[in-house]
Image (tube, rainbow, N blue to C red; front, side):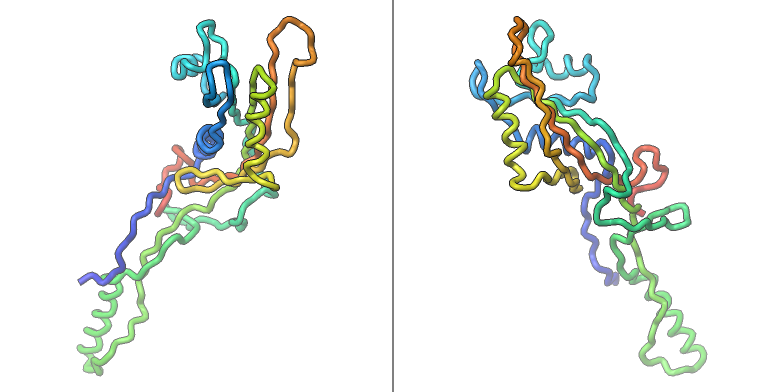
Length: 249
């Protein structure tokens, strides 16, 4: 009989740069879920990821543009500015743990249990040897314990900077869009992003950059633009598609 403890299977998705990007986009689009009043009524503001090519944006999401091809306002644009590996900006796992010097790699022990069948083989071998030698065959103390261990690479922390650009034609719409970025986090300027079981810390820059043309008396359309900078403390597990080893060994 196998007396091993049953294994509880938990999904474990890799943490990549794309995971952090998706978490940032989902936070703006689904968690904040910003709505404004327009000439068509109260509706959700469109959220656009600026990483995609313009031809794809036009074909994939046609409601973002009018018949002339211009973007329909109000609009929220999410753009990744930079990715840096800053040793001073790191999370809870700070030690540099080297991977095992074998073909499997891995550095952090996730789970460990006694391998009952292999351990029992050592115990039976010791008992049989004692029987052949005519020794007392009472209780056998087996010091050869075989463990089954699950290990994974150490997380590598990266600082990812995003710019959230809010654009509208009216001051009241801009006020409605900016307010959740200020009030949702309370008295602090940080929040948590979630994606596939991973948690990333995000920090909102205290200064919001406004670029409006409302003071101009020209005939061009009035435009209100606000840029919000967010720095995310993310982490990468593994090397992505170019990693020739599995995430969990």
